[in-house]
Image (cartoon, rainbow, N blue to C red; front, side, top):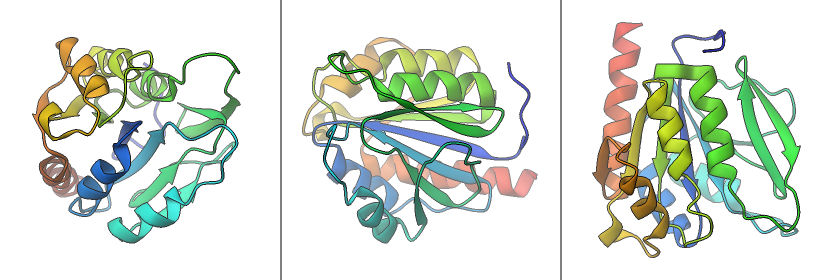
Length: 199
């Protein structure tokens, strides 16, 4: 496992695709941060489109929303989103932005979760929400997080607009908890509170 700069910060990666926006809103509107957690949304953004995602999610979560740029370091109680046409990784508690290759399935959740697992270890948290069947993004990512003893969640498929991504993640056997998005938000709030008390 890589050396971590901030051993107290829980980093929550949220992977989503088609139908993911309502699920993210439901989750983030109830999740609370106790100075020990940040959120990184790795959703499938159109290659060329501008996005209002940071503004939308920032409003519903009451967290400052930041679009990740090269060299940025994660901080507690912030909400990060990835720029369009990009992959984001984490190394030594520093974000790195890479161009996403054309003509390949978008597996931005797997790419980020894998680096998050290696960098944050047991402080890594992966959440897979609604998404269509495009390479089953997130399935390999939750396996990586469990390998490094992190926590994993998936949206209850019956509550998802598109079930493929959460079902694929659950099928790996590496998802700890399966719940509707608002209840995942409550569980994350509890983890954040416990971490803040312990630290």
